[in-house]
Amino acid sequence: MRNQILSIVKGKLFYGIALITMTLLFVACTAEKEKKGYTIVGSVEGAKDGDVVVLEAIENMNSTVVDKAVIQNGTFTFEGQQDSTVVRYLSCLTETNAFSFPFFLENGEIIVRMERGKESVTGTPTNEIYQGIRGEINTLLANMLQIESDSTLTDELREQRMDELEIEYDAILKRGMEKNISNIVGIFLFKEKYYENSLSENLRLLEKIPAQYLNDPDLQGIKKQLESQQQTDVNKPFTDLTMQTPEGKTVKLSDYIGKGKLVLVDFWASWCAPCRQSMPELIKLYNEYKGKFEIVGISLDEDKTAWEKAIVKLALPWPQMSDLKGWKSDAAMLYGIHTIPHTVLIDNEGVIVARELKGTPLAEKIAELLK
Image 1: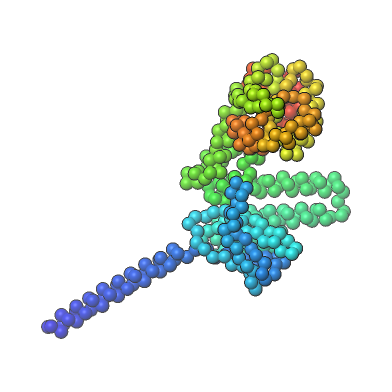
Image 2 (image 1 turned 180 degrees about the vertical axis):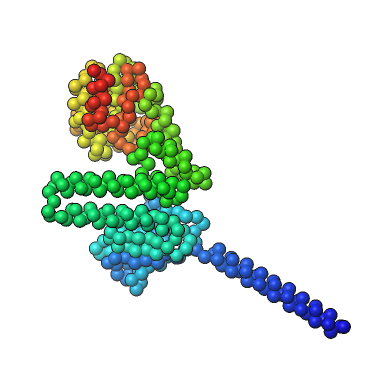
């Protein structure tokens, strides 16, 4: 009997030890699995052993090196662990090429191919989604190169086909953004391309972005811009602001609006080439409707001397104002300006009647309002 009891006890003890051991092994395996991070393995066209591939983070136009890898035996490798999926950039400078493109850093095995016109990042779910979009773009770019080198095309036909492909390029990105706006791929494209959308498009897309992403500083900034655009949209009264003239005199926008004239507020800067190119057309309109039409220039310059020199060189005859804060200008914030040149047309009662008009559409609108 005693031996039987001992056998039972030994059996239960063995079973308990075995169970504990299995549990510990399971926990260890699970922990190991959780610890498993990312591995990036790739190749670079035209690179030689010793060349360096850089993993970068780019935020607010500032680049930060996250890691570097040296190419050995034709390949490079990065290893690490990531808490969440983030946008990163890979770059490499070889004797014949300079590569730099975005991808999504997330845990898993990521395969990279840096090859001119055939860049690819695959292997993990998010990168597979983005690669589908990148693949369409690569095909389109190949078509562009083919058109550029086709000697049978006239200059006019070549330009026409290139314009068509540029439109398709924007369409590819827009489709990718629309389709993926609930994930990080669509949000990345939204942040890159939102300034090309209308206010209504951006508001609709922003509503589709899941709540867990909305604390993103870029999205918060875009949201504030859209709110400012809503407050200064067509049929809304203009928002007043105070700035300085080149001579240092403090003036308000209301000093020029509501005085019986149609007023065009022109957001520009001395460093903005498209702004400078648009000035001859604006001068023509200014002279054509003199007495009934006013223009007020609001500069997003930071360098006062450059601003003053541009006014003189371009022979701008209308009032100018600025706070010399660049993109942090109070005017840019209040009116939700994210690209320049940007125009806001205000009637003689101080109501905004049009935004973002340029060239012929602007001339036609002014003619319509002043007929």
